[in-house]
Image (cartoon, rainbow, N blue to C red; front, side):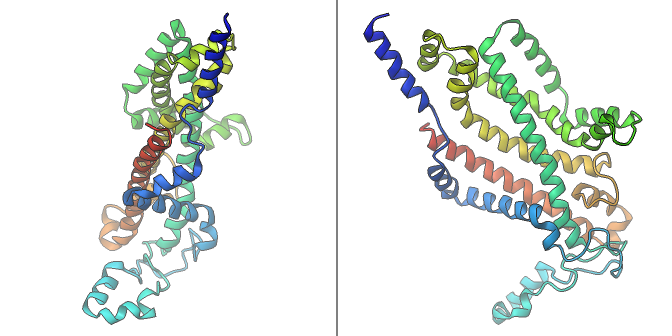
Amino acid sequence: MTDRTLSRIQSIRRRSWGAPSVLAAGSFVRNLFRSPQSALGTAIVLFFLVLAVFGKQIAPYEANDQSHPLRHPPTAAPIDRLRQVWDDPSRLLDVDTYRLGPYPFGTDTLGRDVFSRVILGTSSIFGVAGFGTLIAVVIGTILGLLTGYRGGLVDELMGRVFDALLALPPLLIALVILGVIRSVETEPGSIQAALADRAVLLVIALVYVPIVARVVRSSTLEIRQREFVQAAQIRGEPAGYIVFREILPSVVPVLVVEAALRFSYGIFLVASLGFLGVAARPPSPDWGLMVNENRGGFYALAPWALEYPAAAIAVLVIGVNLMSDGVRRAVQKASGQ
């Protein structure tokens, strides 16, 4: 190999370390907050994240405290406060306008404070959707990188398996898996019991692994043809080094966007499973379960007990989608695309 060829390979190798990187945190954050929509979405997600982490300290009551009046209407109805300010603008500076009162979101038909239950339910939906998405991204990334780089029979077999799973609705797959896991009798403290307790988390991961793997595989097929990957192959680098040190950094921008999208879908899937009664069980303050418990005849008695958890689901999903769109644009700018 000539000196000129070695020099060319070393030059390409140096550029490979600069292959699309999202590690420029300062630039990434500035780009993320540059758009009003993405800034709003990020603020919403951070707000709910604070509630998820510090919910027990923020919530005024326990989730299942039934010592309150039954079906007490909200004491801090936003629409009523806005009407008051509209009719009398001077109330904008009045401290009483911002007082929440004892039951900001009212109480349900069992006398439980809806405000506290919505706050305490944040940790459940954030934890399950967040960790489930994280597991799916890690496993899907590994499978996508290996199948995309190696190709051959393994790629064909995994591709057919992914196609079969993607042909089915995620909610249907989730219901089948949950039904199978929870139909097995388990002994307390056993591995089967631990799996049953974390069934929804496993379902989120299994449902989204094929989607993440297909996205990563598609990017890997394109990236492995680039010069810095070919240079690594000429140097005789092992496959593991090429996949995780050369290709993976270039996949990160696509992966970040995909993870944000999977997280938003994961939130909606967890809420849907809770609504169907196959995820959280009463009296858990799960948002989907709260919507299910307060529909039908109970809605006429205390509509706020359904409206506030439903609004929380909608606001969080919208916030994550706005943030994911901002993440996509920020990643593209940070990677120079």
